[in-house]
Length: 313
Image (cartoon, rainbow, N blue to C red; front, side, top):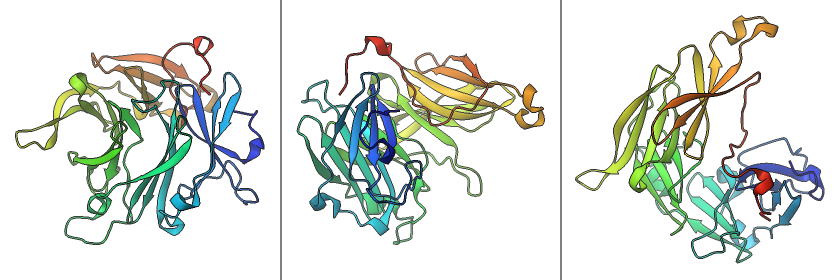
């Protein structure tokens, strides 16, 4: 990724957005290799890079005064990611956010390239969100049921098994939670979900059930003011594949089809992995490309060619 970083072997890639790559530092003297990954590890050092122009910026570490807001043994997941600038910030600036999911609290650390410093935001409703109905003990097995998505200036995560959608408004920097329809049947795999932008500022949800018909719903308020998911359409996918959600970018949802007969064919004759794009405006599905190898964890880019993009760091 960014071989020009100082002491390049001590940096772990964490996110990519708007032409920038985010890395967290492996502590000096640590026994962890950069490729080792424990989602519970607290990271306090970060670098933001522009891979095209070979530029980087080392961020000041998260201060001890802020770091004490979380207790390492209580961390369930520590998620650093890049975020667009605030509404009152220079459009060329950026923010780095670190979401610390703990057993009894949720803490967000935020760095602004304009202000040049870190601050923290907490979610007061975390205990209510993670406490199972009829049980006052937080659910230690609570986990994200979806990847992180950015929709209408909000980051959002589906939370399992509480069937909630956790939302972070990047304008107000406030958390909220809304109900999702129950998609998970106990004893079965949690379906993959993607959250995308719908018209009129609304949020839509694509639920991948790995069947012929998959659900596309819009989230909107009912007569009582509660958020409800209303079915809009069923999306039919080509037969003969198991599907994974790759990412969302440029108004498209990208799906990867894994051939069902992949392992039954001799290695030289194995079929390609096919990718399909779903137009989120028209809901039309089209074949996108084929690949000999499965694509996993690759950031999806949509926009101007890199050669026409100015430096981002």
